[in-house]
Image 1 (cartoon, rainbow, N blue to C red):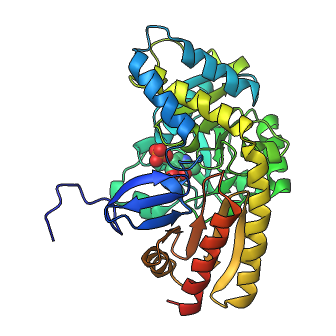
Image 2 (cartoon, rainbow, N blue to C red):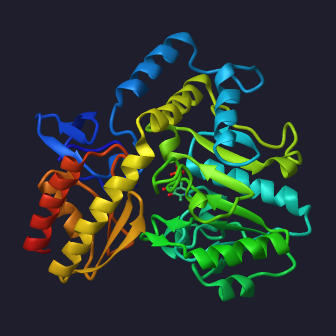
Length: 385
Ligand SMILES: Cc1ncc(COP(=O)(O)O)c(C=O)c1O
């Protein structure tokens, strides 16, 4: 094997990929793979969507980057379009999910004025790999080697209101939550729990930070997952699908409290550059003009129905969980060998949290593509691992 010059933080599998289009990838030998987990939940419009390619080429020729002390059109426009579709907020742009989380945590510190600084987070949550977001992450395996971490995060049980209250004290300033835990193995928040949590945050002036980095941008059948729950976040975090493959993240902070973040307190060199923001504007347009949310609902119903049939058929499947096109197949066995078996058959899915297979296809995935994926998955389960 040829020596790799890469830091070995990723377990890389499969061939060398050279090209992608829609829900398919091709390797250097021309073999075609069905990708039902494009870009780790990022490539929501499939690979190299023609409108995204066009807008990248067009904007790259005009202006790629501009520092944040100068103005360009697209940053303001994107902020306005996001706010129009969510709630009254001020928007900060960065480049990755973890930076969005860091921004929310820094904002919480400002909001607490040095008197309140504790944040309640959830067991099995995932919020990123930099120090504050790692500290907020409720999974030991990611954190143990990096202690001491940032203090003042309290871990509550997910979907357990009593546990939330138990972790609350007069120093608590906020709660950070994924409404569907992604890396934690596809766990969906219950509606009643979120209702109680929301009222509790309001009663105690706690910032409700909703991490929609994986659930946002249509993944669950609504543009933002919180819209299923009849709540409004104080802070919403977006990334992954926002640029449909191009790095960008956004933090939406409730307008009436956002003013405490003053010039000089926070910044990002690349955040909200003309190229990234113009791409995200196009992503929003494509979602609407191509009726993507409707497709998510239709394909979700179809996929869940078929997977529940699989559950009846294959003992190894313990349960099917998720919402929209964020789907977890919970197994009674380790999931990674099933992922490898699918990959050998040229189907790309994901294994997470030890025994969960995760499917997060492009939101414009076609029924034939789902059928092909299910056919391969059936072979995988028949053969067993
Ligand atoms: C819910 C959630 N928050 C935060 C992150 C971190 O995002 P990034 O890897 O872009 O820093 C992720 C990444 O998977 C995520 O799923």
